[in-house]
Image 1 (spheres, helix red, strand yellow):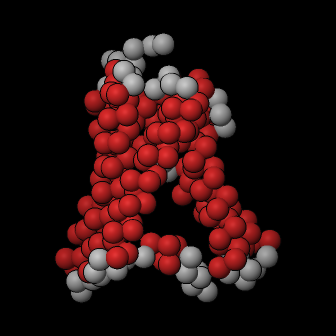
Image 2 (cartoon, rainbow, N blue to C red):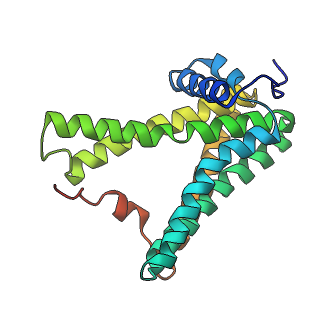
Amino acid sequence: MKTGSSTPGDTPAGAASRIMRGVLQLARGDAQGIEAFRNTPEALLSALAPSVALFVVMGLSQFTQHFDAMQVTKVLILVAALLTRLVVSQIAASFWGRDAGWPRYATALLWCGWLPVVVSLFALSIVELAMPGVGSTPAVLGIVMLGVEIYELWLGWFIARKGLQISGGKAAVLVVLMNLSVAALYLIAAVLPPHYNALHELMAPLPKS
């Protein structure tokens, strides 16, 4: 396996192309895609940057609008969920003696983390075009989101297996641990004020144009 160190001649455009290629390869189950991601702290920070920027924008928007405790909770939960996945996976990688390759795995996981969003939007758009008015119903939303969630679980398993070079069983354990940890965060958010319910928000019908 390559060391994954930074390439001096790797321009921003070249890096973006390499990352996109890696994401698309992993998305279709091509293990070679993991080689597109660097095994360095700098690569991990770069992968974190888009999420951090999004959270900052969402947080700053609360200063320009009327304070909404529900929206602030949503931002905090998103941040906590992202960090939880990284912490849990790093602890597991260290426990299994795979911490040396963890930066590459975490980098791939972060970049590929945008895939389910793209897939869900694409699927919902196709359904809405094929059956206008039906794609925004709770039943159809539920079916689409279930399919996307299954794909996301498989993708997380595949990246863990190839990125950390662990068995399929260990990769499954890691995926379960990360998702249970994140689910616990959302459960706490739903129980405690202001009672943010992510599932209710997710399944809410789309606004009609």
